[in-house]
Structure formats: C-alpha cells, structure tokens
Amino acid sequence: MKKDCVMMEDGKMMVMKGGNSMAMDKDMTMKNGTMVMADGTVKMKNGKTMMMKDGDCMMMDGKMTKMKMDKAKMQSKK
Image 1: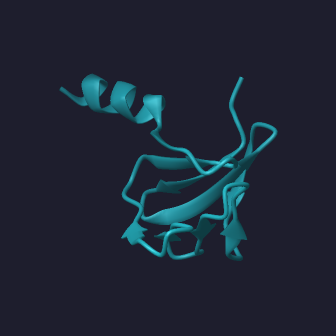
Image 2 (image 1 turned 90 degrees about the vertical axis):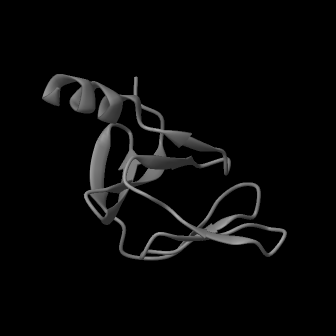
C-alpha cells in the first residue's frame, strides 16, 4: 500500500494520492507546517529551506523519506 506523499521523480514534483500519481501543480503545506513548492523547494516550519532530489518523498505529515522503489531500479541497472 502506497502512502500519500509528494515526491521528486525524474526532476519533476509528483503527488501520490490513493495510489495515483499526478504532477504537482501548486505549493502544498504538510500537517507539520512544512511547505513544499511545485519546483521541489522545501521550507521547514523553522525557516530552513532545502531542495528535494530525485527519489526524495515527503509524507503528508512532513516526514522526509526515500522511495524504496528507486533503490530497486538502481540495483537492477548494475
């Protein structure tokens, strides 16, 4: 079961909702106050900013994770 999140995939921000993936067309605010911009910029509630990289996934509660499926893709390319 996929969790709802926003993720950077091939240089584009995508929104995962209910197992469906769509292009992110507007900035979103997560439950913890972190803002994610459509260009992949992340603004934490404490004012710190960072840029999401390919495979980065921000859960709707504001926790950052890596997509596990990208690791599988990388291993299969070896």
